[in-house]
Image 1 (cartoon, rainbow, N blue to C red):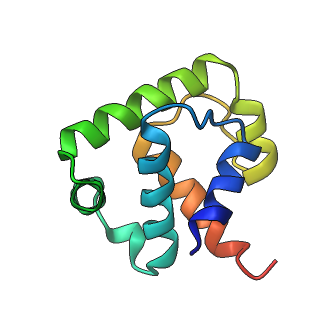
Image 2: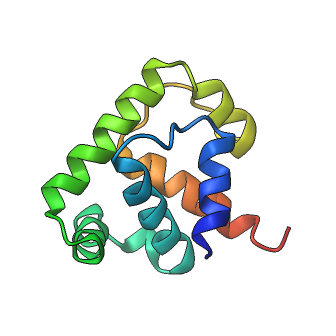
Image 3: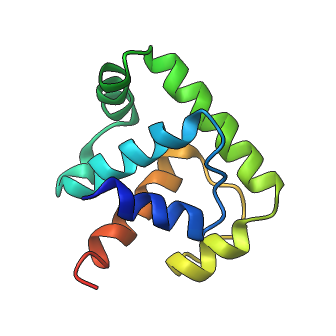
Length: 112
């Protein structure tokens, strides 16, 4: 999955690209969407692989993504998330679920 397509999706649902966690989140979603077994991948494995890719610690990845998503939900972007993905819950999702929903969306719509 191309990161540019994932980045376009993130911007479309209202994720602010100025956060440090933005490239980490895009990378993780790209990995999860590209791997058909991704529902079985743990957040720990995805964070570890992303940390190695960006040469930072997994804790830094986790903290940066959580900070980004906390701000995302506080800014009231749940309606954008739901309208684009079709996910019924507009409330704050934990990072694992947020990533899983967007990865699934990317897999379902990759031919469009």
